[in-house]
Each structure stands twice: as C-alpha cells, then as structure tokens.
Length: 312
Image (cartoon, rainbow, N blue to C red; front, top):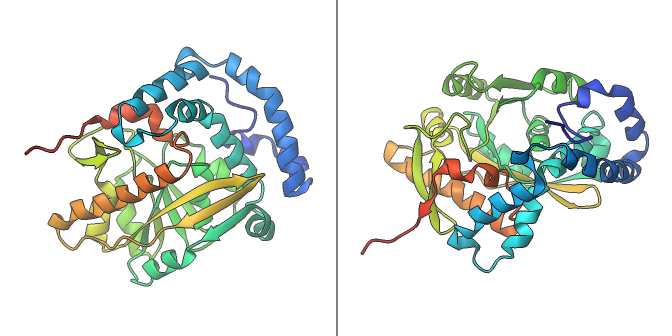
C-alpha cells in the first residue's frame, strides 16, 4: 500500500526535506505542503488497494452512519465523503504539527492553542498520575506527544515506528512508548502512574478484538462493545482519566482541548458509570465536530453495534 506523500511514519527518513519546509515558517510551510499534497493526492488514490479505495471507504462509512439513529438529521453523505479522505488528512495534519515539535515557541504561539490544561494538572495533583485518553478525532497522532510538554508521559501505541519518530521529532521530551502486546498494558500503566507520569491510551477500540474486557454501552442511538481497560486501570490505580482532542480550526491552526477529569471509580460497581462518562465525551465531541473525522468508522463493525431498544 502506498502511503501519502506527507505521513508521520516516513518523517524520520526525510530530514533535509522537512528542514527546508520548516524554514518557510508556519504559514509558508502550510501553503507549500498543501500544494504538494494536491499534486500527490490523485497519485495516492490511484495506488490504493480496493479496501482503501476512496469510493469503498465512503460507502463503508455511509453504511455504518445509516445504521445509527443518533446521526439522523446529519448530512451523512457529506460526512462519509469526509471520512473517505480522513486518512491522508490525518497524516498531513499530524506531519505539519510534527514540524514544530522542537520549536515550542512557534508550536504554541502559531500552530496549536491549548484549552483546559488546568484539568490535566488538577488531575495530577492527586499524586497518582493521570490516565490521558486522546480520542481518534482529527490529527490524533500529534496530540499524544504534546502531553509530554505538560508532564512526563508514557504512551501505549500500535504499529508505529515510535523510537525513530521520537528521535527525529522530540528527542528532549520525557516521552516513552510501549508497543501494544509487547508486555502487559495494565502492568505498564500501573508502573507509569506510580511514577507520577501520564499514561496515554486510545479509549475507543482494542485492535486485538472484543473479549471479556469489553462492555456494551449506548452510543449514537445503538449499542456497541467498548474496552473497559482505561476504567479498570483508573479503578486499580486511583488515577483520574482526562479525555483530550486535537482539532483543526483552519489554515494550519489547531486547538488541543483537555476535558475535565473523570474521577477514578472507587468500586467495581462504579466502573460502568465511569465508562459511560468517557463515552459521553466521545459522543459529544463527535457530534460537535466533523462526524467523518472519527477513525473508528473504518472498524465500526468490530465494535459489534446493535440497535438500541428499551424493553418495557
């Protein structure tokens, strides 16, 4: 499969290329990258396998969107088209933000505005660390390392050349990565939290599949199976959970938003309440922005959606 011209995985391989783009400054770099991306986009689309073909992705997303009553009244055709182009857009925006990771003055003055960092630091004041939950919305790859500008961070990742990207992009940050499946995620999370670190993990989908560590919850008028791992980790560690999103606001500007902390459940019986609180944030953020910019539409069937019915 051919990757788009701008993608975060190949960033470490093209040091001179990205140094030249960086020299143009944020506005110039954004405009230059847009021109090159427009030239590359038809080449990229022409070389995609059938499963990743634009029209196939659009049709797949539209089928899923039509299956959830919570999107009635939305322009699902528009959002499905947005989703079909979301993969290259995710890579483009994440790569652009990555250009400025070593230049923090420019990063936080001209590229990324940060809302609600107090929520993160208030959560950390418990002394038990913080479980950060970046949502699969917008340029989510870039959201995770920005946590490390606030506090030392350990992240769980899957299928990424983490060490190469870290060395090329933010070598001075106290930012560690643990590959999913390389060790116990629960044990790794507890170790990081005991050290007072942020432990970051995506909350929406476990790529290993649905198992006993999942629960069925209401979502968008249906029900889906979602991972319980973040909530279980919060209960066992006593660490609060802080959802966060990174969204484009236009012309190479982005907003990183920290949500109010979700307190750790104090008993197994309260875990479901905490899980629902996490997913309330996910649903509200999804509906408030571009519905098509949610990576999970690609694998929504793996969340085993069912029609939500209230039994009398």
